Image (cartoon, rainbow, N blue to C red; front, top):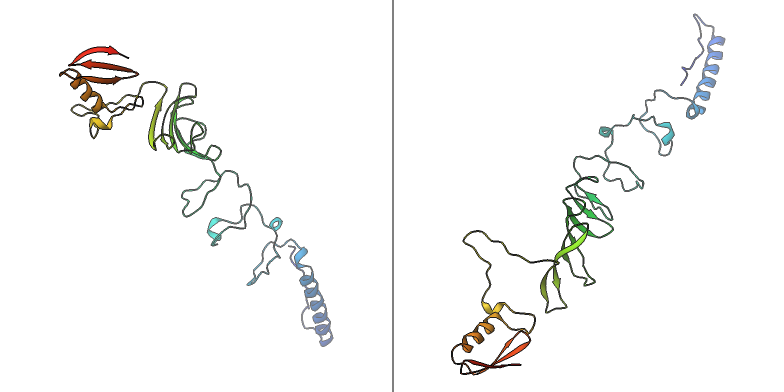
Amino acid sequence: MPTPSLPNIGDDPSPRQIYDHLIRLQRELEWLLANLDTLNVRRLNAEVVEAGTITGDKIAADTITADKIDVSELSAITANLGTITAGLIVGINIIGSYIATAAGTYPRAEMSNTENAFAVHLNANQRLTIEPGVGGTGNPSIVFTEYNGGLKGRIQMYTSFENSLLIASDGDVRFSVGSGYGVRFPSWSAVKSISPGQTLQAALDAKANAFSGYSGSVVAGTRTLNFSNGILTSVT
């Protein structure tokens, strides 16, 4: 803002000069007040600034710092804020976002807003994901993927088959335990084949009977073994 040039009354003014000076000073002040909003104001000290009187184009870049902002929320902001670097975000809802521990590098963990899955990537071909469902079952699954993105195995609730926990693999399923430990089951009756639906305990009992003078039939896979006094007489 140009420095206002107010009239100087001079030394030893006459009453008429004082009167004329006051009239001129009044007009100068009225003009300044009427044109203040159109001037280039470099410094302004005010107790109250009315809402709507300062617009964004009147605020110079880098002039408002974080320590000058104290608000309870910024809900009125709707914008693409670009890249935001923050030390800590507390008490906030983030919806429909992609969140990752690294940008395009490995290893990384991520939450996908397109697949609705959590994933841990070792590299471009090996990952573990937690997904809403695989194979059209609609049941939550832990999926292991490797070798150029091919499905290798999954752990999944399988409600369409006796409400069971399904462990599926494109290869072997192996159990590895430490020295002195083993893979444990409540009993051999808890180990059951899918077909013909026989428990391991029943199969062991049938084998024992077959070698102790048993007479009758024993189902082995899809065949029936017929015994007479412990001797196999036929297979049907």
